Length: 556
Image (cartoon, rainbow, N blue to C red; front, side, top):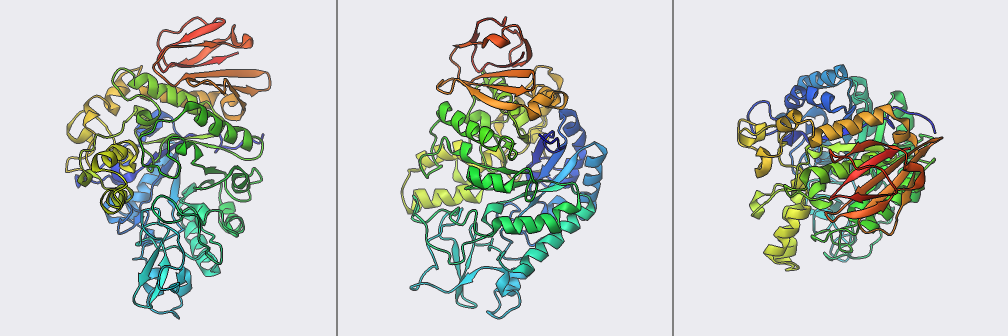
């Protein structure tokens, strides 16, 4: 297998609005990130991915961009950005920008022009259609509730928005649009950024006739209906030729709705398109058919089946991205682990072990390395996330699918805002995030769970992550070894091996608080522990009794 630096990296995702506020306005900013670069270096990560920092009216927290070559006022200036980029590079950390080019803001100059008239030169930068039988051109739904079409009175036509109505979709079939995007990307690469995480990149190519799709719980076809369209690979290959080959980049595509076969095309090792993709199949194991709003717990066997399918399916062909969390997902410890005081640390460490020992590039989302948890939201007005607020109004008030109590329970479990509350730096007011009023509530458990306390405690979740990251740097087997699942039918234990030449690792994780026994394969019985999430390590014998949420890695 070809060695590449991005396969050996660990990426840390920052949601700038919630990371560190340097000027007391309650909103995280670029200078706050620069201030904390030493913390990131100490953790050991080598790539930083920033959620969008471009100029934006903030309808969808910066994923609605009005100027790709300017910085959002609340986050600082381009000089602040340049300083942060320099600080990252001085600390041996590469910087990845969030590339949001499926859509722009409706306040972007291109769209302002596009909506003026049907013969405006920018008209074809977006996807406009006449009404069909007096209503929307097709039955596609928006990701944020309601139809994916907005009627515009100016020209009496509809424009497509797979996300908010303030996020009109770009028309990638127009070569001018593609060239504009490529020029902008090259501008950032010249500035010195090291790559791109590409937002919903699997949606950029729509089927030319925009056909209806199967209808879901809300009466619309999924916003994923256009995923993996007819020209997506052609457009990404063009991007590779005109942009990505101009520098030594790292690229990851967010590909909702991606299949294993499609992923092999996106992220094939011939590097014609992207280095890797984010797939979300393992994020759906606790969904209820097409409905994510539930507090159903996953069946571990489903999780193992999905992750193993991707580990084995991409082996030797493409590269995996490994993640439990990001800005669009709730906190993993509250979802797949146990965030009670008793089991918090061991279950956070267990989840980390399970993921970081797989083949692929691990992504750590800010606060995950502390075991930050979901948030005890009490009312809908505490939420800031468009997706959560719209879903509440649609499913509780309009369609009466759920009661207020049910929906609040589901939001506390699944809302994206669980991951967006301020980073917990210390036990001072507002968790040390800001001296002002935070833009969203701080999780009340910050006095127990914070970076300062964990940096001082050698047995903390932070130091465990640090150790896992260090092991990946030291041992090629963790990066390049093949993965093989053991005990596929166990409901409690996730166990697998990694193999590279003569070397072999055994990874065992108990996903539950019940004690359970595991048989150690003979070849590992004379091995040694590489890492374990309990201080007192048990002797390695024929069988080991696993304690609550216990995980360990044995080296042959």
